[in-house]
Length: 460
Image 1: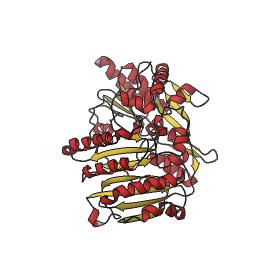
Image 2 (image 1 turned 45 degrees about the horizontal axis):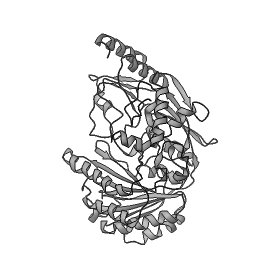
Image 3 (image 1 turned 60 degrees about the horizontal axis):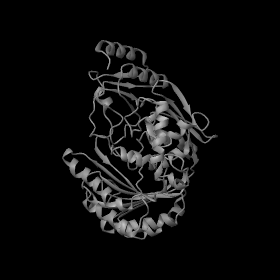
Image 4 (image 1 turned 90 degrees about the horizontal axis):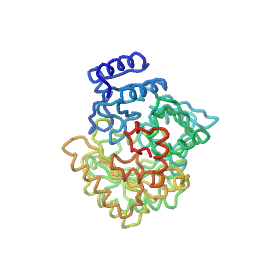
């Protein structure tokens, strides 16, 4: 570590040189700047550099390297493990870098490193274009894409990395690199699921797809109908086209207008069917679910960007998530999945999700480090609550879900769905052979493992 005098002089110089704001622990606004999505995370960086352009990012990285500070990178701040912040190090905060430039003729978008999913979706909406995005509008695009990227459109147009055209990166040496199929192809491959291990993505270029119409069917059921709902949803996906997706979920029914009063605050089962197309065709696809006894029915066309906001969770909540990717959804598996809902912590924001894969996901390139392509379904226990007194029961419930469905697990996992679960889970998230190759790429671009606040791949 640098001496106090050197550190003080370097911080003063950073404040002078950076176009954006710089926060140290005694500065007004520091606590707000260090707060992330997961309220369980309470870390105190030495310096937070809120960059406004790529030049700022270069300055910040060189500052951190000069003082030998650990460097974390913040985009959306949605990492459930709090990887966007550290203790006693530097946070390179990209939240002011949110520009999205859509090229309708090329059907592509250049997305700045701090943009959220809402920034991308709203920029594409006037052009009737879209690409696979996360299921929450506040998710950061950069971390989402580089981690693989799963959302409502992935069965139709592939994972986010299947739509990755280029990445503008600042390396651990503070150098600018552009990675694409033609430039630094080894690095470009690694960025298809290897996350933030290789540098700071200051901009990402994504392929877009024509999306003239998008429809949803949202149905709420009493929980005792859950097993029948899950089986029916499975069968709808099995016979439906790639344009259909969605999920089955258990949750505490919120006090919203669409929820009947007798369900508020109690365990509910829901089915969400999303469809790239119009309402009439969606109704035909969802007819078996509509035929089951349900308490709420919302069916119709809706702007995709609005759907992306539907299950946004409020900030300031405590979070613990995990996932298992499974080989199929036979009846005995669905029975186990639904039975675990009986112990779901109610009333909290915790959700018990079953999401379909297949389609364009399975058809995408198996060369990329996303080994969960061959799974048929994802189980995503999503613990979210407000009271610290609920920590133990909510965390244990998430772990119990994983244990229940492990007999059907492929062993692979989408790393954006989990927290810090150890090295073995990182390997499960990128693949054993891919881990070796990623470590070699890491050695080329970050041999000292400067960017280690992530699902870390150590340099070979």
